[in-house]
Each structure stands twice: as structure tokens, then as C-alpha cells.
Figure 1: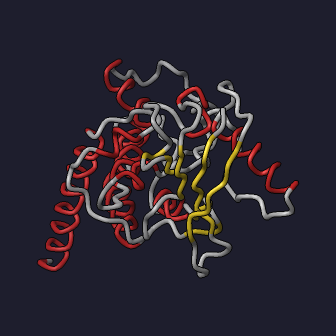
Figure 2: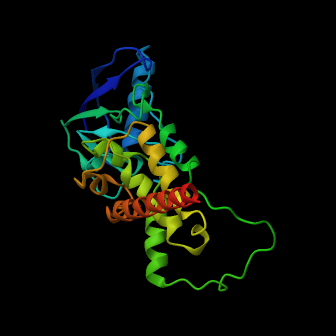
Figure 3: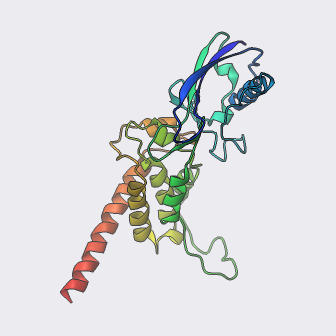
Length: 257
């Protein structure tokens, strides 16, 4: 295939950027989208030009680092797939493909297609964990958990933190990501002791990072490569409201004493 690529180039976070157009020939339909970019960078190197910076690691849909807007869609036209899982058979000879980085205040551009997604890490640090006492491992069947509960928790735990939900959301909200992390911990017994502090800490950190507010547009679940349901946002909102009410009750109790 012969393709025309419009790629966002930006040498540094504070430098101006613009789309640059490249013609790439010899693209195989069996290539992944990232392999196509490898081919482009080989061509640019041979021409004495600076290769396009883009993030990647596992190339197996696990790490979430391959964040690209492809023709205006987070991760491209295939649903339930990260950019690294998108193959060039999704396109045809002569296509024009526009590739841009995530666009969100919470994801500042580092270079070209690479953005800083450290804001998601800081949301996790604000409460996305459970405290575990050291010692011998407990028997797996010592705490019985319903099948439906386990499946819902594990579906939420599939989140790879890629940020596609933020990029697709017109408000640049990180609610699907935060809701997924709260859901997979909050539904299991191990997550109950810190459930309230977790909800308050993570939701408030999400606001601190500059992400927009959720208006339940639903674009986030459509863009999610793991197809996580928007229902996790409902659970996040409930947990946050309950936790905030309990915090106010404790403050009132202390003040009244």
C-alpha cells in the first residue's frame, strides 16, 4: 500500500507544533500500525530527517503506552484494540491518515506523539491500592466472593491506563479510568477498609490534575481498548458521595463533642 500520513510534529513541550505530511510506500496489510511507523522512521532516517517520537513498549495491548489519535479516533477505527493491535488491513491503498497525540490539559505533550500521562499515576498514588499485612498467604477459599462480583471487579481491573477515555471525552475527563480503579478494589473484601479514603483521595486528585468533569457522553467506553463499561463511573460517583457524607458526619461529631 501507498499511504499519505499527516503526523503531528512538536520538538518539545513548549515549542510550537504542526502537522507534517509524509508519503509512505510498501506498507503491508499484515503490519501493525506501530510497525508502519517503524517503516516511516526508517525512511526518515535514510533521508537524514528526525524520526517521529512515539511511545510503545509491550506491543501486545497490555502496557497502554501506544497512545495515538488516528483520524480523530483514540487508538484508531478498531473497537476493543489498542494502537499496537491495530493492523494496516484496516486501511486501503491511497488512504490519508492523520495521527495526533492525546489532546488534554492533563496530558502535556513531551515530543511529537508522546504525552506525559503521569497524572494517571498520581491518581493511583492518591488511593489506588490496598494495605496488606505481611505473613503467610491466606487460603484462596477463606473469603468467598460471589461470581458476579468477581467478574465485575476483574472487568474493571482490565484497565491499562492508556488514557484513551480522556482523549475521546469532549470534556477530557478521567472518570472512566478513576472509576475502573475504584471499582476493582472497592468491590472486593480486601478493598473495604480504605474504601472511603480511596474514593475521596482519587476523585479529588483527578480534579487537581486538571481533568474535566464527566457529563456521561459515553465516548470513553467506546474508545476504551478493554471495553470497560461506563457503569464504573456510576459506582465511583456513589462511593465519593457516600465517603464525603461520612467525612462530614465525623467532622460534625468531633465539632459537637
